[in-house]
Image (tube, rainbow, N blue to C red; front, side, top):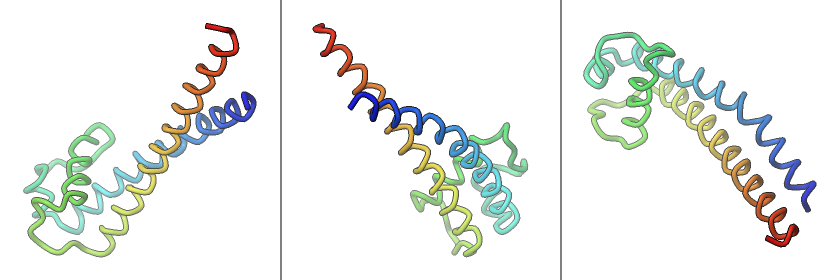
Length: 118
């Protein structure tokens, strides 16, 4: 069982880096789509500065506004909703890999401590 846990840990570790890179890239694309398709709503929610990797907190506020459904006074473009779903998919996949990483690491630690007699 220890080998299986180590393999799960290693695979999750390998998968998490590209998943989070895709998430942040998708988040930036989502912010640009939001600004292009709904400029007035974009300015109302986060201001007029364009999205960038350095301003991902502003773009994440847009992401959260759609997720919660608050502060949205107009119907959103289907292309923007597709961009939102893609971004959310990468976020959930990255979080799932992180949870596997955490579970496998903690379980392996517990198993090794129990086998050592601690």
